[in-house]
Image (spheres, rainbow, N blue to C red):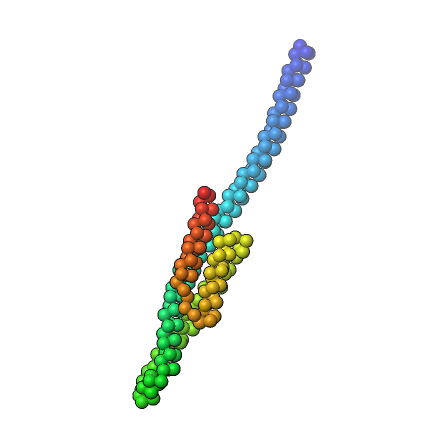
Length: 191
């Protein structure tokens, strides 16, 4: 009977030891699993954040390009009006008409100053939009960003020398940005 008690005690002790070891291994594995799940969760959170930022960038860029096109169109119209007023003042016959009709001088001066004010406001908007776009296309190693920046600098140069924007230049900028936006959207979609 003594042997039987020893065998039973041994079995019981080995069962308890096995249960303790198994419990410890389960705790270790659970901790590893929890840490792995936390890492995966953090990676997914970062991925969502990057995707959301990229979507916001896409939306803002699209909006800024649309604003720039509208502003450039307005600028071209106002620039033409402004130049027409200037040419009118430089024309001798027109100056003679103005001299003979003082009320016309006041009327033309009012139109001229209103146009000039609008012209300056539009110029300020364009400069602001261009600055934002230059910040958005920051990656000079990216050939598409570089091409977009080149077109933006061309527009900026045209403003600085008070020149109309060639519509081809604006169309080229739209095409470049459309390609950039499509590529970025593919990244968001994971394609």
